[in-house]
Image 1 (cartoon, helix red, strand yellow):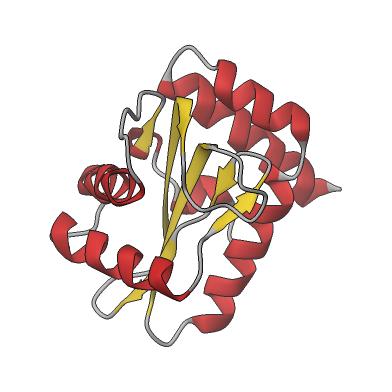
Image 2 (cartoon, rainbow, N blue to C red):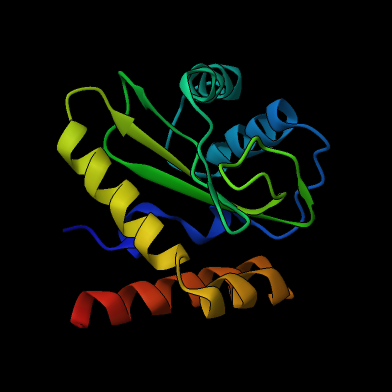
Amino acid sequence: MLTLAEILPERCVSTSLDATSKSEVLRQLATLYTHSDLTVDPETISEVLEERERLASTGVGSGVAIPHGRLTDIPGVRLVLGTHRAGVDFDAVDGRPVHIFVGVLAPDGQASQHLKVLARVSRLLRDPQLRERLLQASSPSEAYRCLIEMDERLSMG
């Protein structure tokens, strides 16, 4: 199993999302992917994430959303992480605003890897202490370290 450190570059983390709508959040997450090794246009990424949202909201509750989708020409699963202090209405299952967003993109044909990563991210973000630490992080690198350290602990345990 991949570790999150292998698929989430630190430069793809933002602690200052400021979108006021669901589609704007998805655009901001898509833009974060420009700091990764992906050469896909952010507009294309945004459309893929929007398309998935139309099926059902990826707002899983407790202030968390995991927008995800599949693309043809990417080398492997890639993540981005963004936090939004005020929170955004994201049609979450519990109706509460979302503050923590983890974007997941996977290549077509890697459905099992895609699902494993979604499950892992979901499991990590069920921890209320991790969610609190991510929201309190004073910098992207601090938020990155919080998530990666928790993932490493989960991998060992």
